[in-house]
Image (cartoon, rainbow, N blue to C red; front, top):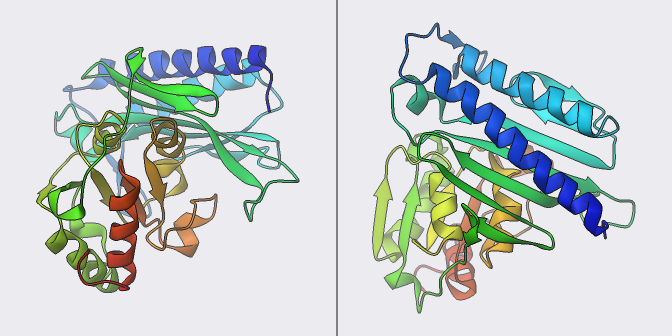
Length: 279
């Protein structure tokens, strides 16, 4: 377990990272931008790149021995015990179209030799920051989940038929994932699609909704949300019910299910895995 002073320093740093990246993102938000398509056809702008550059510089200054993985600028010192995982603008398509739901994801994972995680790394601290909305979730190991400094707590739900489900869009599902997801969406009480990006994970953490479900996520998409959700009392795994790890983007195609209630999570996993038609 990390000592209290180190934990406080990490929390202070994560706030600085959110502040500086948010300032850069907002300076470009709803302004004319040059948009470049990456190799996977996803868009990137100067805001993405400059925000990540600023965060990397702050991390190197505060903790030169820590590793960094970022969406835009690659990997460095990834064999380090502490690993920062950055997504400077999650929801670049929202960002370039003037939609304020884009966020910045900042995760800190710890790799230890005695970890039961298959890659030795576990989520330790995370931040979901929405600069245009001025909403910031923070939470992790020994760091209670908060939204803008006030407690965030996932809510109970009696059964999956009463649950509300959110996802950004089903466009990223493979044919098999779409079949699995259809079982889930038919079982819930409410379903909403559309442009929520990472905001719906914060919604689960704050107890505003019950389920967030996605596929095709990369490490930088889920590394920050996991510690926040766990700190809020929510349950977050892959679609098989296994803990997410550094390789989940490859081994399970980044399939993520987050639920505020343990019973709803268990029922959702059964539906996604095909072990139950309704629960």
